[in-house]
Image 1 (cartoon, rainbow, N blue to C red):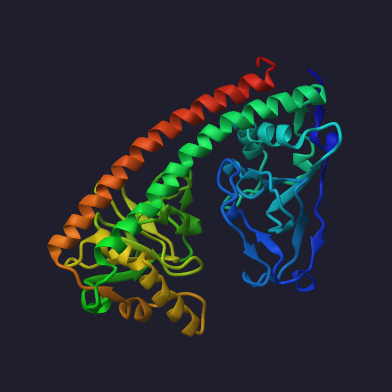
Image 2: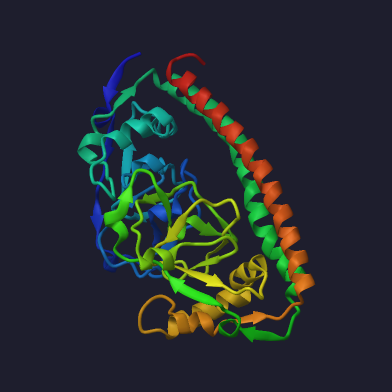
Length: 375
């Protein structure tokens, strides 16, 4: 099979545009809107996100390629037009290259590893567009490209359905919370129930390591649980600051900047870990952690967070904001029953995750065979 450099059959189009010249309703995509594997999860608008710096234009004819941390494999096919972060490269295939075929090829695990090995920058590795243009692309006839892409799209649909079950399970915890506690009228300030409150460490980039202790960030907390798919590691110092920002089982972690109010309960099984400055640790021994986490992520909790953020001089929440949160008053037996139900949901989620991992393994095998000409 003939192989050609990507730059011979596609254009990496970095058409910069000033957001001030765009209608405020223009769609804006950042890397945070693209999952590993390429699924687009929502978007912002230029006006809503208060986008200020130059961005790249893209359309439904492009493949979007995340050049920052290319090991994450954030490669997607939008079905709409808009602007994107300059850490996303819009690639326009020529008439000789099928867009879906290209997206599947670049998302091959071997190609993701290939890209990661050629990225530069220690803490924030980026792939140069010039280097990306040199990537070898196998180029069978266009009809064969489309046949391969169609097979892989059908297989990917099965994986997508499994992920939709995960999305449903993620929302189920809040549905249970609303059913059990949505009608409660009495509340109590969180500050009166906190034993310990702190935010994470700044300037720990000097401790970054390829292995070691976990360094938890905003992307690691959501829906009351830890997501350790994209983790950073540190060689933590033996210092008072490290002791202060080390997490313990039963802690509730909450995001206090950017995407406010994402939470996670630290499980008993977590190894030694620390938090960065965008997270806070909440320890309230009299509140069941799962109940506290869900209270903060509930619609009422989020409304409080947004209100306090808008009233602040700087973006984000301070300790006074957190202490002022009103948490519903529920009996210990009710809270423990809620924790039992959420743990059951977590167990179901783990089962689906394992099945999803099998799907991913089979899909990867199919990808490899496809690009070896074995389908």
